[in-house]
Image (tube, rainbow, N blue to C red; front, side):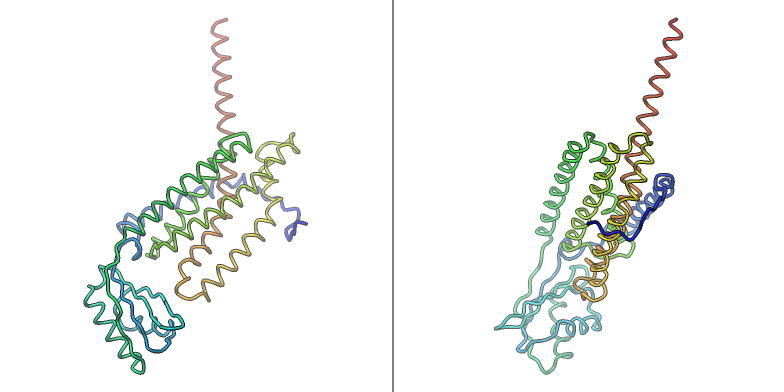
Length: 319
């Protein structure tokens, strides 16, 4: 049984579509301008390369203490990864090439650990250069996967709804959502890492799922409400699925929000992407994808009317 907390809503979503088209355009333009001004995305170590250092402790040490120690040391942007096990307690530290040289990084790390943890013995096990080639390869593979998934979505939706425009609108909605989140990351100068790429792919999946549910209701109503206009059918379909959309997205939003505030620094950026992506995903399903279908139908009607008028005019001149 479908749970509802909004009953008999009658919002005119199609009637207010143009202001929301403008909002989407402004967000996209802001992201593009930010990327141009900053000279591109702020890539993390996965893509830009950096220095890796592995430190072993003789006793267990809390990651939040290590993170706090380096945050106050002034070394720069450092990523920490724990490899603690039953036989050893080690931490991997990574920093970008531009932040600090390999030798300076090792010396400063050793100095900070001795100062902040004098009761523990820290041994530098290895220092090495980390190239960005693996990360770039993974992103390339992710882009290929995303591209072929777009093609698959267009084919599937076109077959199901007997029109390719439905699939194209769904894919445009995904691109809209991912790029807006990407642009917000650029505006806040947040790093793009492999974890964030995973968040983008998760947002894409969430967005198309919500859009397909709405499209399916529109398709059903096109058979049940044949006497009403297409805009009215879309409005009714959105209002009918509004409770389901809000409840589903709210569960994802709340979990992401909890991770954002309580998940720690490691999950902070991923959770932020999911919080923003959840909001944008719902927004695009209602205010972008469905109105795009409506605009396409208007375009076809105008084109058909123009063709009929031209044919009639030609017939009159001939007579």
